[in-house]
Picture: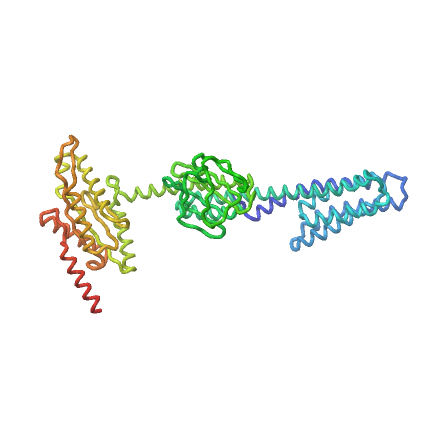
Length: 529
């Protein structure tokens, strides 16, 4: 779960305060040690003791005042405060250079390290280095005359070097921690969004946004296996999206990932890639990637991969690889859900025996097409079809043969219509065929093809004995030439179906001459208008 902004800031500040508090308490203890040392030591001149005592008391008071009164009240211009605090603290630490003995110099070194820890946590790189410069180099400048030889110089420089190393270490660890937290939050948000998505396009859109945000790549894609190719359903390359891109399943990096079901990390493609049977191919922009990594995506319904690439060598880390793998796993599960949801949704639309649309969904689909046709001034033809004497098949040969006749009829219809046409089981042995964009004469040609195909069909009963081929009666109506709305369109086709039956069955009503007359009269109306 993604934490609210104010809560994240609160936790962050609490963690910072805990770390800073430890170093502040340690610094106070050191200043107290300096104070106690002055109070119980009587050998130094009174002036030096007073200076040392002032530094100790001032250091304690400054730390306490900063922690309790000043820092908590700074709401605006915090960056300015950090720089001012660094300058004051650096100047204060540099005063320790006035203390002559080695014990105080050791305490100074410890104080410098503790203060650097606090500043690198709270203030960042710039103010921390200002503190180091003001305090460390001032200390060396004051004591440069008393330092002779390589070892004494090394001893004086060590606290400065240690402070720089500590600063960079803390800042780098802090950056890594923040990146890790950011990625965890991003993954939580991504998993929440993608788990509730039931559309493939929506899943790919969420994954697209996540990849852009999570990994600094020039190109990325999601490929799904489709027979012997990989179909890139999401493909982004150097600022542009590419569509309908396919790559071979064999002989490619992507294919290797899918076939071996292993991630592939290629940090520098300037070197030869030792993968037997694979070669580099270029898709998208005509540019060669110099870094590439891909991870498999595998579920019961989905086989594919997710991959990213860069035009720079060594652009990705193992951390990027792990993140890509996590994103791909979540995306694969989400895509699997969309496929399953689509299958369930499709099954709810279909007749369980014939695989055609059921009565309810056929009406819904037909209404949608009629609405589109009204807007686009297009025609839709409807064929109502019924198997002649279907009851005889059930009574004479059994329901198994009756079901076979229904199934073969639907297969025959599908073979004789084009993509975009659709069939529905109206009830029992009656079916409806919708032909968007087809005129009456074209629908009549479809009806004739179905009629002839059924007549030429060879059927056998369970005993392998030949049985008569079924015939069909068909009625046709056309929107909007004959009917301006769906109910009238269905009623007219249904009435003509019964006329075909009354004419002796195995008939198509109306005959072809009817459609020629309609087309001729319509042409005359269009010419006169």
